[in-house]
Amino acid sequence: PPGMWTDWARDDFIKALDANMLTPIALIQAVVPGMMERGWGRVVNITSQSVKAPLAVLGLSNSARAGLTGFVAGTSRQIAGKGVIMNNLLPGSHATDRIASLDHRVSQQQGISEAEARAARQAANPTGRDGTAAEFGAMCAFLCSVHVGYMVGQNVLLDGGGVNATM
Image 1 (cartoon, helix red, strand yellow):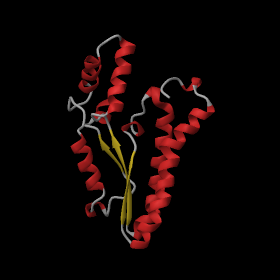
Image 2 (tube, one colour):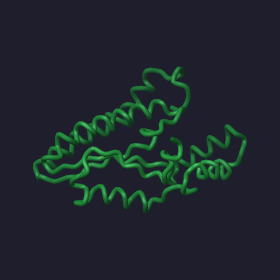
Image 3 (tube, rainbow, N blue to C red):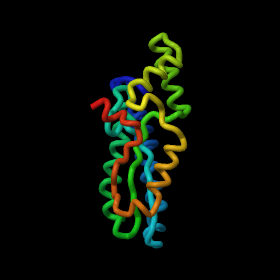
Image 4 (tube, rainbow, N blue to C red):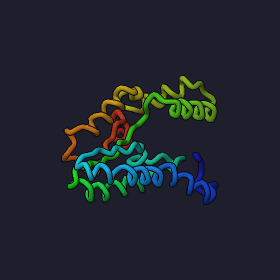
């Protein structure tokens, strides 16, 4: 849950680890052996730009996602020689229901409209907008293609330059 880490219960940590790290690892364990047998495969873990620029109110998911990227960094090197390439995609704000709910929460906290909250969030990005589903899909397709055979264990930002703008 969003908020201060001092307010989180142990179960909150376990849920965040399960959703953002343990479940993706279980999926990797389920599919990668077959890919290795066939000598080819691609795994793309969808994490978040918060791995590179953690959000103060999302400490649980920040830390769990960072754990997944560490797992991928090491594991990808073990399987690359068997033709299986694994990378992480770190999207920033894209036009999704989750981002809309974030805008709603910010509007409630700051006493502004959702449109104003969205405009302020988008203005902080060098592109001045959210990413599109087409852009997200195209990057996923690329990361699953034959063209990434030499790209192993990478964290690929798809955020309109948002992380670099904050650093």
